[in-house]
Image (cartoon, rainbow over all chains, first blue to last red; front, side, top):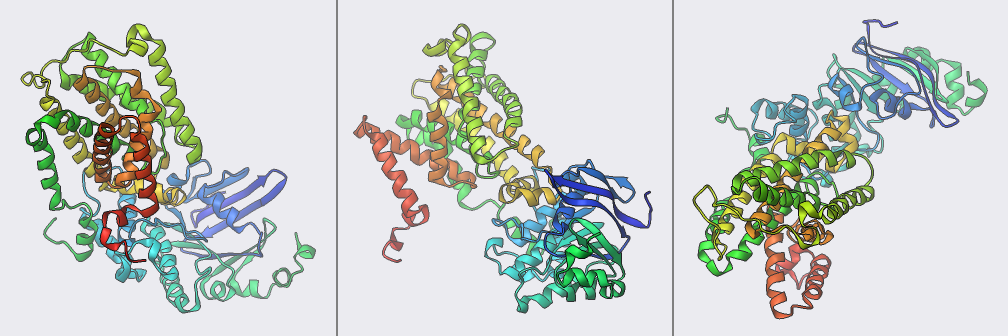
Length: 255
Length: 322
């Protein structure tokens, strides 16, 4: 069942809320180094799937395997330590801190210094060096000392991703990274997404089809909580079933 | 390691650096029982409630846990220290340690109740905990003296040399020293990576979990630590007054300390100390003018403080502007 080519797998994953099946026997195989997009109309269960993978929601049935190890029962923070990290569709930031403090905190936590209480945050030079790299990579250096709550939306969106990358992910789950970003700040964000390190496997949830077809090398289409089809971008683009779903005939073609 | 400090490192370390006024403040504080001998008793009281406020700030200000029952730990520390002095040995420092440890253990047990739920449920649970302890101390009158309080606590000299005097000078120095030590330890803690993860939990618990912070463990550790500090404050209270009574568990205690944080500002350790000073001095001054109606003036002050804002209140020259 487990295959070393795949960094993250879900096997027959089911999530029921009462009588509603939000995730319906989803089996996904995310290859090492993949740029794997999850697409589907609203209510297809994309975010529920992310919540299951990250452990925010417990699965009703099925297994989740990260690098050959069953993580189905692990708490969210334990999954993060093993390299499964996500970003959020709606920014989830630490408003009272500056980007620099935020990243210093995240990097310290990731390096096992989060339980240290006698040394000042940022005293460890290697932590600060990593923060400077991240700030530069996500174009946050010029605003590193501003309180996060006062940052422009585009910058907040970048910080959202920088926080996730500070956790040194093996698999990064991006939940609609360009959602709500105004056109002027969009390009900056797209560039940072495509410049993510190649050894980090990325799962992308996105409504923006231009971004999906530009960025992904594998696409899975979800409809009504179940996998409709999976394939390379060219196959998906010409799949009549997918076209039907996106043209609004989803009910007819539901499998 | 300290030789190569980049701009980023300097700015991230700025918040933890000792400010110029801090040593001045502490020198004045430690000199105050000598500078104002006749006020040593109130200085002692201020130092104790300031320590209590610092403790609450760790959980409320830095971690965002709302508690209306923090007096549970104050009271537990007070009774533990008083009973220890009465039945085991009268040495203050050992008694202080016993009071602190007792409250720490209680804090560890109680921390399991604050991990889940919303602010409102936590408010109720913490309040309930203090009520339970209050009633226990009331009913177990063979041990605690019930509503008469625990009397006949005679303390030995501090460090075997300094007897508590009637003026309260030794008591004031003793409490100020304990406040100073605990404050400096707390100061280290809040500026550390550990402290930063606490603030992360306060700001956004969902994201804190999503970056690998073990949120429950953090809450439990900080709650237990704060309980220990509150226990130390309680022990000081019992030791310097030679008495422990039921009112250490009372809701007023928990409410007063929260008011002190509101006055001085939460999420800033000096806020608790400043709040304690202002609250106690106002209490002392107003109640000497009008013993019956001091709460009216206190209430009025709080309403004005909240309506106008602390910043504006402290800067009268901005009042004309809009």
